[in-house]
Image 1: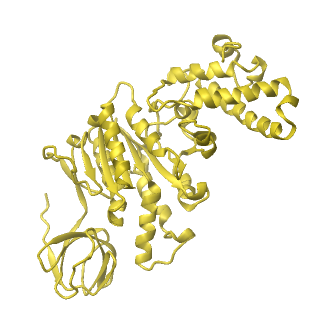
Image 2: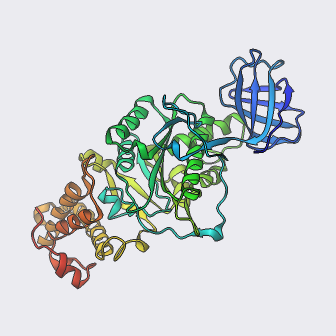
Image 3: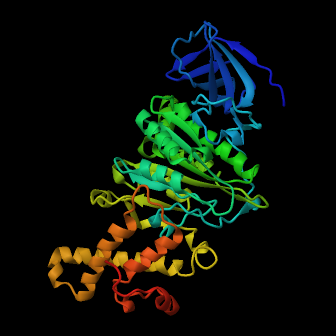
Length: 462
């Protein structure tokens, strides 16, 4: 491995919160790691956020408290931030900087990799294919998750996105191939972090999960580095070890808030809602690390989770995320108020890669028709409910009243699923047929004749 010599400068020019500015420096680069040494010879790590002609802006990971302008020393390492990676990291808990938080034996790292990753050659990318079964029917049947896909969950304050994240981590499966999960939590409270760890330990899945936790009291720069640490390990496992990796990142809103905070300290001109103008490209630098590569068996699939301010899907964070990713899973406050868990609103939700990865030889031959019919019928339910609120249920036609009953069954039996209940694709599709069978056969216009003969069960839904 290449040896790096350290160039040392004495004295700081300016200190602004977690940032320091050094002048009269030469040959320094963006994202280069530095060592900041105080008067007591304590060493703190820092990262160059901006490098110009004769100056550098450094974010100090441990904060700037106690640093002397005249006597502090800066050492430039001439290397980016690296993280040790190994398959031994599965089953372990790390802080936001990739340092173990448990008391287990030391890890034998197989390699040291740049946390910023290596861009995937577009010509080497493979179109995402095959599915990951999450065990949640509203995702598996209506918005199927595909290996190599980026499928975010749009949630809101107070909605159970943490429980959904934990449930997916506990239940997700890939049939017949090596599979693991990397869980990155940014800006979470201690009790939330404890919930995740306890949930994975009690369910026995921790051995195939690597957890990166950046707590709410951690520096902003750590929140920015945490997903990069997680994705670097994912790249090693997927593209070196041929493992299918699912990366769950929560909460991306906390990540973006950290970006906005640092941008404000640096005095950058704000864009929408005060976020930096490069928010789109910064998010893309994370999301585009998902995918499949030609001639490599492993894959990286992402489920970023973000909370929308005031449930506003046009807010910059969900808005830009939607442009980069291949769909979204939207959580609904009205469903949550009805006691339905998980409160996933299927109408605004979408998986753009679903259509090419369901059906015969992939899930089941009737999957496309069932998903389409459930979607169309539930959309009709919304219209009928709006009409019933005006004229009253008793004045609705017999068919419309059947749709009202279908809507209640769809929410209470199909969408509603116990936190510990895991449904397979087959069970979800069978349940879909049970609920659709409450409607007259001539209303199921999205179904093929042979599917109706095989699966339609008249008046079996209760």
